[in-house]
Amino acid sequence: MADVGVRAARREDVPAVTATQIRAWRSGYRGVLPDEPLEQMTGPAAEELWSRQWEEAVVAPPTPRHRVLVAVEADDPLTALAEGGGAPRVVGLASHAPAEDPDLDPAVTAELLTLLVDPDHTRLGHGSRLLNATVDHLREDGFASVVTWVFADDQARLGFLSSAGWAPDEAERVLDMGRPVRMLRLATDIS
Image (cartoon, rainbow, N blue to C red; front, side, top):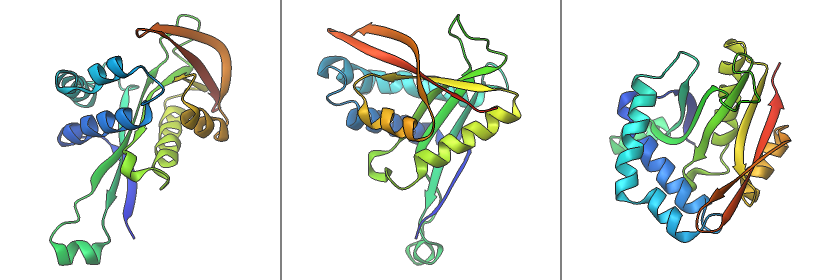
């Protein structure tokens, strides 16, 4: 049985955070996004960019209300001891900040910017733990509601967030990715 948890991301987590994002996007957005933009978003040049951005987010966030959390998993302590390993490894991440959409009040509404779990570690509760830890931090910071943007064709993410009490709030956007890609804004009350 693995030892699991959620904690604040550290500088040494940045390579694993970046790799988790790339792997999760390649797996989760295949068929949701057009192939060419997805390859550009997950290729070597993009990976370098994401790594720099994650390091900045972890080491020098713009405000104390900007956070990056990681889900970690370590092997069973007895197995780890026998195999000489066992250091917790990053298997998921979440980031949040005050909402930036002009129709929202950033003093009371936050945005879940990222919620990703490595494809080899899905359906093990990491996403739920990350979401719950995020909400705990947001409540401590005085937020009353949270929004997030989701690709309209991402049925897995829509289903997960709907089951946790999120619902569309009527805001939409369309990205030009060689073809129109619709996004929905979901919201939930955490007060």
